[in-house]
Structures are given as structure tokens and as C-alpha cells.
Image (tube, rainbow, N blue to C red; front, side, top):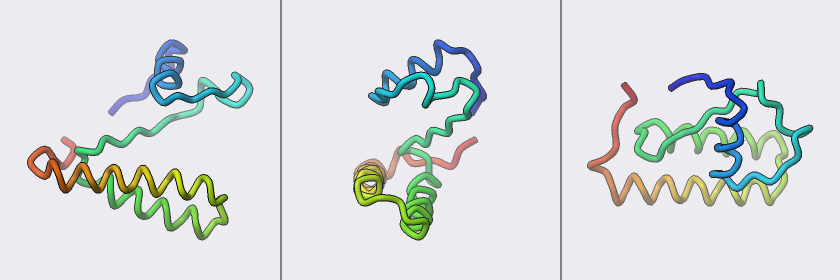
Amino acid sequence: MGVHQDPHTYQTIKTLLGIDINEEDWRQDEPIFILRAQDHLAFRTIDFYEREASNAGCGPSFLENLRRVKDAFNHFRVEHSDLMKVPD
């Protein structure tokens, strides 16, 4: 885990995630938190976030995309239980 403030790091993250937004919408000093599927806590964290997002009134498209992410994390943890670990 780390904090990065290098503009190139943010550009790399945006490219990897397929984010196509203009610079006004993406502040380089805005923290980003990334979960890995092998993280034993990730699925429960996403599940909690999904409930909170639904309760907060997030739009159906956002919630559907979030469900897809959650399903992918669940699939990974089932198929690769041997790779799951608690972060160190």
C-alpha cells in the first residue's frame, strides 16, 4: 500500500482502468484506493460499499457496474481460494 503523487502514476492508472475523463474531473491530488481480488477482505468491502451506494441512491448504471465488479471478485475468490490472503 502506498500513496503516489506522481502525475505519471495517475495517468497510468487512468489508462489501465480505461478512464476517459478530462483533467478537470480528475484531480491529481485526489487519493485512489485499489483493491486486489486476492485480498481476503476485498469482497466483503465491495459488498458493504454496494449496500451503501444503493442506500445513498446511486444510479442503476453505477450499481450494475459495481455488481459486475463484485461478481468478478467473488468468482476469483472461489476459483483461486489458494491465492487468497490477508494483507501484510
